[in-house]
Each structure stands twice: as structure tokens, then as C-alpha cells.
Image (cartoon, rainbow, N blue to C red; front, side, top):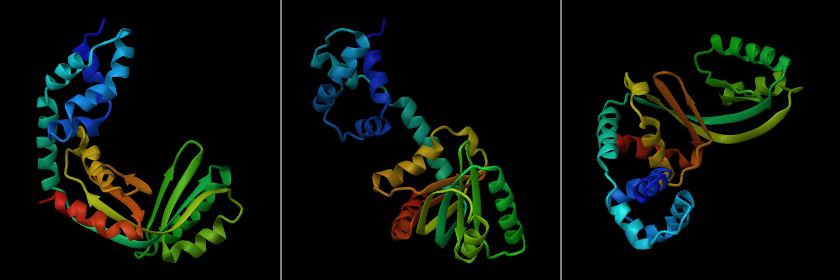
Length: 218
């Protein structure tokens, strides 16, 4: 059976923002205890006093979280160049047998054009395509018979060259995306390879996004 300490810890860990805010002394412990009390009661299957929950919160050890943050900070200092692109469009199509053939056509065109930008992410039921302005006519031509699920224009992207070993560092992507979440920047797409990460946002948000990412390297 879980103890009060274990129940409080598991409840707080579910929300990383709360954990970090606690470590930064930004949250009132008494208020937090009252908020999570119903969840703690549910986990323990009994009623617990607010004072006991407060004591458990105060005993939470930040050592593990602080160690992870320290390691991530080292990684962010070694981030590579940022590449910014604007005037992008985002298309999502329902997966069909013919869709793959049309994607092959547009990829063949981009192979002979260094100015083209395209990313293709294929899921189980749908495929997402992000392109730059010169490729839009080909999308309209090749995909005319495909089922368009979603489309948004006026986007921009920032591609980040990631340091080697990023796959071994837990919390690395969270650390980057957290900065944007705190700034209330909605992400349109996140595209990644082993050593690259591309964040797609609305053009109106690109300056703020760039400023946040640059600040991480300082």
C-alpha cells in the first residue's frame, strides 16, 4: 500500500511544470496541498489531512530533477546553428495507396532543386507534408484527388542542429519545448531526425521563438 509521501510524489511528478515551480519557490505549498488532496485521497483510498500533504510536499527531493537540468544545460550550450525558413505551408492528407505515388513525384522534383523545402511525416492514418512557397503549385496539381484533412498557411520553421548524444539525455526535448509552452507559443509541427529538430510555428510567432531558443544557448 502506498504511503502519503509516495502518493504526493507520484501526483506532483505527473505535472512537470508544478515540480519545477516548486523547486523555484513559485508555488504556495498550502495551496498546492489543497489542490492535490483529492488525488492523494483517491490513491490512498482514504482521507488525508492537508497538513500531512504539505509535509510530504516539503520533503520532496529535487536532487534528481536538478541533476537532469544540469546535464541538459550542458547540452543546450552545445546546440548547433539555427536555420530559419518562412512562407511555409502545412498539409495533412488521409493515407491512401495513391498518396505515396504522388509524394514520390514531388520528392523527385525537390531532388533537383536546392531551394525546395519539404518534410514528409507518415503516420498510421494520415500523412503530413510541410513545404515552402515554390512547391505549392505541385501540391495542388499532384494531390487534387487526395483527401485533405488539414491545411494551414503562413508558417515558419526553425531547424536546430542537435549535439551528439542527445538521444541518451532524458528530458532534452522537454526542456526545449517547455520554454515555448511557458511563452504560450502554439507549435504547428515538430519534425525530428537523429541530430536535427525542426519546430514549425505561425509566422507571427517566429521572432519570439527564435529569441527564446537563442537565449537557451547563453
